Amino acid sequence: MPKGVPGGELLDLTVTSESLDNGNYFFVELQCIIREAHQDLQWKVGIDGKSLRQVSPNSHRYIFDRVFDTSNSTQDVYEEFGKPLVLSAMEGINGTLLAYGQTSSGKTYTMMGDEQSEGVIPKSFKEIYDYIEKHPSRKFEIHISYMEIYNEDIKDLFNPSKKNIKIHENPQKQVYVGQLTEKVVSCVTDFSKHMAFGEKNRHRWATRMNDKSSRSHAIFRVHPSRKFEIHISYMEIYNEDIKDLFNPSKKNIKIHENPQKQV
Ligand SMILES: Nc1ncnc2c1ncn2[C@@H]1O[C@H](COP(=O)(O)OP(=O)(O)OP(=O)(O)O)[C@@H](O)[C@H]1O
Ligand SMILES: [Mg+2]
Image (cartoon, rainbow, N blue to C red; front, side, top):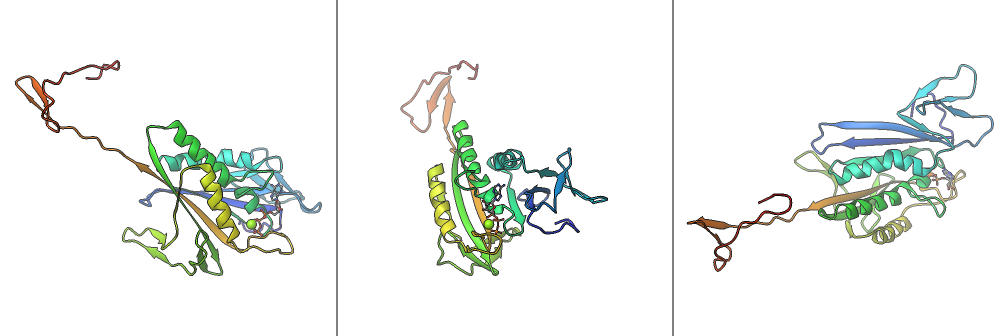
C-alpha cells in the first residue's frame, strides 16, 4: 500500500502480476477500488482513471496503473484485468490476480461475488470454457486446486483433512505446494460444485467490520494443460508406386490435391 494512505475501509488494493515459467519476465500492476463509507473521508479518482487523492486542500496524489471508482462494477474490473489474464493463460502465459486490502474492503465480493454480482473467479471460468468452445481443434484438460493459508498453516480446501502442507522447490527453482488435491473439471457446473465445497472449508467468522470475514488468505489455482495428438504415417515410393508401410496390403496409393491446393 502506498505510504501515507490511511488504511481505512475505503481502499481496496489489487495487485496483478504475470510471469513466464523461466522467470525472465515479471510484471506487476497495481489497481485500487474505493468504496465511499464516511462523509468525512472522501477520495477522488483523477479523470485519467490512474490517480487518487483525498478531498482536502493540498492532499497528495497517488498514482496507480488503474483506479476504479464507485461507478465501476466487478464486470469492469474483470474486462480490464481478469479477461486478458485468462486469455493469455489459455495461450500458455501464467498470470495471477491478487486481491489485497483491509477487512471488509471487498476482496471476497470482487473475487467470488454474491447472489447479485458474479465475481471475477466464476467469470474467469465461463471465459475458459468459452475459449475452449471457440477452439475445437485444441484439446485442453483443466485442473483446479484451492488452498488456504491461515496462521502460517496451509490447508487443502478440497481435502480439509490435509493440513500443515509443506512448500517445496524443484530443481528448476520453481516453488510448489506438495500434496495438494487437484480436481479435473470439464464444465462450469463442475467448477461451481468444487468451489462451493472448498468455500465451506474456509475459516470465516464475523468481525466488527464484516459479518462474513474470510480471516485467511486463499489461493485458487487453475491449470489448463494442452493435449496434443501426434499422427504418424510411413510410406515407401518405389517405381512410382506408393505403398503404406503400416499396412502393406495398400499399394498403388494415389496422390490428391485438396481445395486448399495442398498435396
Ligand atoms: N463493490 C461493492 N458493492 C457492493 N457491496 C460491496 C462491494 N464490495 C464489498 N461489498 C460488501 O461489503 C461487505 C464486505 O465485503 P467482503 O466480504 O468482500 O470484504 P473482504 O475484503 O473479503 O473482507 P475480509 O478480509 O474480512 O474477508 C460484504 O457484505 C460485501 O457484499
Ligand atoms: Mg473476504
